[in-house]
Length: 469
Image 1: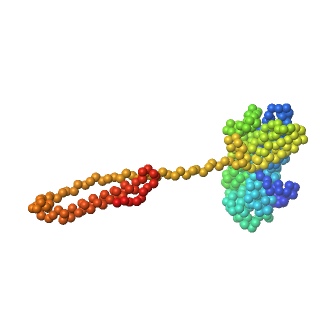
Image 2: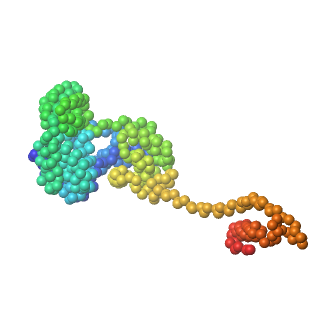
Image 3: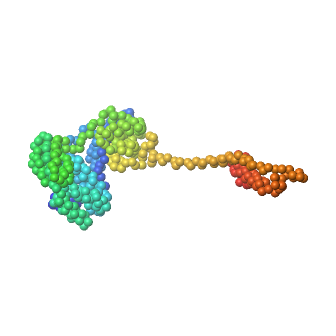
């Protein structure tokens, strides 16, 4: 690629603490409720001091982003004022280091986080080359993991921003081959153009890091795909966005300038709601009502982690009983109690302990202390397996006795000597039908007797299988 897409691989990495880059992720947005306090001498003052010190620690933390502050630091228009850019830089550096170690899963996760932050804060990104660089490493990591379609998409986005780019020296041979193939295809596609307007007019226009003049203006010969527009004005602030350009046609974008360069400010939380949450935490009422109020706070502040705590006297000192609620999981988790003495130095030390506990809990939720029905359990209780109920025996059906069939009787006559005989004079006992009737009766009666003997033996629940004749 060109020189601006070929930064040094380990630039800035040695300045980071060992192991920090390896675990870097997008920091979760966290809201800390004003710490509550049980009534008692000095408890309220200690609670306020602990709250203030904890917030100070969280503002410096890289692992969480504190939301919903009463007096948040104001972001100016100077370079680097947007905290999202600094977070993206950390993630990009960590992702490149993971790629060099061939830890492609970690690299993919960290670089995706960096790209998302760059896109959110694009108006404040002064060194635009970091965006295509991040996309390039994402493509290489995706291909190494077998995500071919994703790799193509990332490389196509690089080539839309920088049609003359060349692959980095770090890329393996198969990555270079794919990149060159896509570059040849991209060069054959129709170009598009972009009409840029600003409100108010007159802002300096940069597209994909290249300055073109002042708005309104038209930027011609843009490659088909996604492009980034950045506007700046000393008087009216900045603006930025991502826009899709299609070949053979012009797209139009109008941006409103603003002096707000940091994240979109969250809507302030009603102090009464914040107090209610603190009181419910102190009373151990962490059920549906608490979750509903916490969800309201999360909606206002865009927080992904709600932290509440209550200070109570304990012995000659105090204890903080903290809880963490995840709006996405709809679960409350209990942190370990934090004990401290009634002096400011102890409060300062335990504020750091509390801040680190918040970071760990909000990074990974749920963990081992889930509240179920207001009771802290080591793990959520598992319902017992269903008990198999033995089916009752089905009683045998009552026998259906066929209706007797009356056979036509032959005509009998009384011959001489008082012997029964039919019309031709043969004795009755010599006739075939007499013995047929007798045999049928014998067999039928025996079968029925055997069936009856197979029935329930006097209600004992057993079956007598002996057949008696």
